[in-house]
Amino acid sequence: MSLLSANGLTKIYDHHTAVNDVSFQFGAGKCIALIGPNGAGKTTTLRMLSGLIKPTSGTIHYAAKKKNADIRGLIGYLPQHPVFFKWMSGKEFLMYAGRLAHLSKEEAHKRSEQLLDRVGLSDAANKKIGKYSGGMKQRLGIAQALIHQPKLLMLDEPVSSLDPIGRREILTLLEELKQEITVLFSTHILSDADEVSDELLLLHEGSIVESGSMSDLREKYQTAKIELGFE
Ligand code: ATP
Image (cartoon, rainbow, N blue to C red; front, side, top):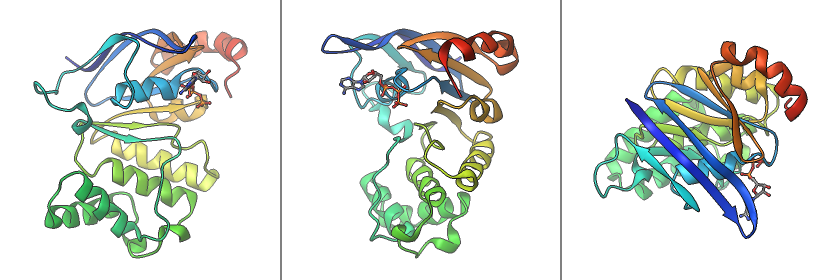
């Protein structure tokens, strides 16, 4: 059974179609990469899936959603440009996120400690975020996205702004996390998608042009690479 299915998702801004009739589904326990060049519609698709914006048309179905429940409880979302309060320590930031997610003080404390350990930031727990490297900030952002124990972790371009060390840290973390939670992430870099995802959705000018595993798509991708200009 699918964890998530999207049917005919379309987003039109004024007269510009950012996402056009996108349909896909995937089951729990998968790691899916949404890949496409700048402006392909990745962020718009993720924002619709996470409930941040409404589709102009189309439907999204989450199997785990209970009647009248807010889908945001099921999703941990890390935006492309997350906001961090640099004067807070990593621990304070997670406590704050936990309290916003309606955890009790004790739960927020316990969950923050677990997550700092999970993303390899225990030693930097009391360090100000302003002193964190880009990779450390992204790891903290992933911890924040996981604070309420979602079913699906959704990450928008989690490695695109990082140096090679930070990029490697996040790809390794995703490789580990996908054993524990379903992951959907966007990227414009094929090698990143290839490295950690089980399935790819290739988005171009708002439409899905290919989908499947890397081995399914390898041959087709040679053409797509030239036509779509991915890295
Ligand atoms: P990038 O990696 O550059 O963020 P993307 O694949 O995430 O690209 P989107 O940000 O989803 O693409 O944008 C898809 C298209 O929709 C682009 O042409 C963009 O300019 C347009 N768009 C996105 N958000 C808005 C908005 N709020 N208002 C108007 N147009 C928008």
